[in-house]
Length: 302
Ligand code: FAD
Image (cartoon, rainbow, N blue to C red; front, side, top):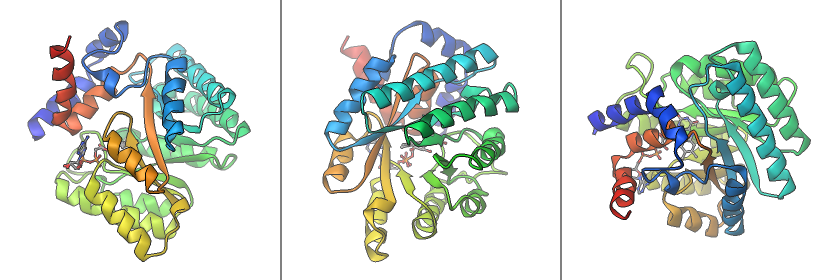
């Protein structure tokens, strides 16, 4: 359903709707896929997941940050999340978006914010993942990662399989802890595969490459075919289970998340929280219009 996908991606980029949504609590079914709007709520959700053998990566949601004051606030929130994870002894690490920390305002300012976060996380031996956004932010995000990793080794990033240059980048960053995904944004045909089949093939190729050659691999997908393929591939190539983990988003395929953890695989749930939930939620609807069920259920059970 490419048309519906485009509609939701366009909605996710609508700044007016984004700021309107922030004024209200979680709506439209977003509460099924966003673990609260504040730190105590997200800590509680993560502890529940930990109790079931699942680790977490937490994302303090935020986009469209064009003011330094907003980026500074985002940085302070993330520092507070790091403290709360440590104080509450939660099994979790940080996922963040460089644009939330000022990438679209000023590269050096963003760098300073990121270093402060990475340094604080390093004190607690906590990993920080730089989530990947759209193509325009790809190279600057890699540049930030490379510079910061000269001093800190608790950082990693994401490789998006829809990009033609994904193979080149995974080879370049093979010594990093990497999350591999299909890719969530709408990208033009001169930089990214458009056909689902091509993306899926590249996704598998990248995962296999990093499992065989790279540092720790996070395979982030809800696609059972890919998950089954990875399980088989790991067995055939004697790849120990401590070299990789599966990741899924909070609220999606909950039974499968638990099943994978019960089978003895490392499993990590991506846990988003915060008042800036709108863009994240619209991208989830774009990926899988069946997620609209969340919305209709919410509307009709009120
Ligand atoms: P899809 O291609 O959406 O689905 C494949 C098949 O899996 C479907 O046909 C269906 O049979 C099954 N399936 C999928 N979802 C469900 C469901 N909910 N219930 C039942 N069956 C289902 N993207 C980025 O661009 N940057 C990032 O930094 C990033 N980080 C991510 C982190 C995590 C933990 C995850 C899980 C995703 C992340 N993404 C990121 C999003 C990713 O790029 C994809 O857009 C998203 O995961 C959808 O692709 P998929 O691999 O899950 O499977």
